[in-house]
Image (cartoon, rainbow, N blue to C red; front, side):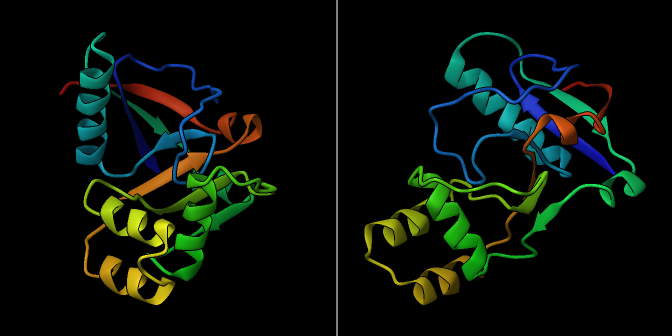
Length: 159
């Protein structure tokens, strides 16, 4: 499986960095299988940080290695996915037993719905109904050093 990481720098050796940001799947190294999504992330991060150059780093993980790791996968925006994201966005303690989390990304289009859900304006059924109409890209999050050890850097992709 080929995965991409968009940033303002080339990342040849992925690391799990401490962050105070409330991310969808919590702390981890974020990738996507969608090159266009990675390019958008790279441009956005470079614009926000006002330093570096929008860069997409590509990686490979072998299918047989995925069978070794513990993976939590959300196939689409469902109640379990929204509950998991909500806990991470609220920075609630989650005991993480998985090496990799895979699922839809809460992007700029979904954030208003998720914000209204977190605020209590939408119940979970209403939020899911609104989210299912959106074509969400994927995100693949490597949660620990064990999972990162299976990820092999392949190269840089020009934007």
